Length: 192
Ligand SMILES: Nc1nc2c(ncn2[C@@H]2O[C@H](COP(=O)(O)OP(=O)(O)OP(=O)(O)O)[C@@H](O)[C@H]2O)c(=O)[nH]1
Ligand SMILES: [Mg+2]
Image (cartoon, rainbow, N blue to C red; front, side, top):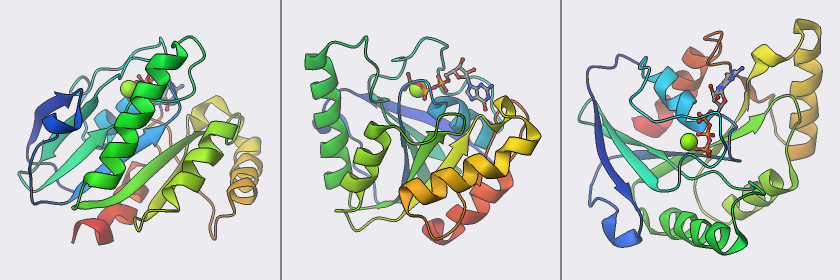
C-alpha cells in the first residue's frame, strides 16, 4: 500500500462524535498494551501519528485516521486492563460495541493478540462477540520480536488452535518491522 496522506480526524468519546463518512473503515481491537496504536503507526510508516504508551490504557477514545483520502483506520480502546475501574471498562465496552454495530462501512476488524501469552479470556470473548457481526476478522500475533526465533511457529500454532483459525495468524513486530506487508496484503480485499 502506498501511503500518500494520513490525517487525524477525531477522538470520539461518544457515538454522536463518530464521523459520518461513506468510505471503507478498518478497526484495530485488542487488549490494553498489546500494541494496537503502534501497529497503526508502523503500517503507515509514521512514528507518532497515533499516541502510544508503555502504560496500558493509553487509548480511551475511538480514534479515527483518514488515509489517502480514501479509507479510515480506527484505533479502539484496549480491554482487559485490571487497573481501569470496572465502571470505566464498562463504558469503553459499550463504546466499542456501539462502534461495531453502527458503522455501515466497517469492512473488517484486526484483532491483535500478544504472541508471547496467546489469546486471553478477554481476547476469546472479543472473538466470540465479533463472530455475531457480519464482518471479517484478521488475527495478528504481535510483538514476535519478544519470542525466540525457534519459538515463533509454536506460538503461532497455539494461537491458531485456541482461536480455531483456518490459517496461522500473521506474525508481526513493530520493533523489527516484520509482517507489515502481509497485513496490507490481507486488507486489500477489504479496501477494494
Ligand atoms: N517489543 C515490542 N514492543 C511493542 C511492539 N508494539 C508495541 N510495543 C510497545 O508496547 C507498548 C504499548 O503499545 P501501544 O501501541 O500503546 O499499545 P495499545 O494496544 O495501543 O495500548 P492501549 O492504547 O492502552 O490499549 C509500548 O511501550 C510500545 O512501544 C512490538 O512489536 N514489539
Ligand atoms: Mg492505544
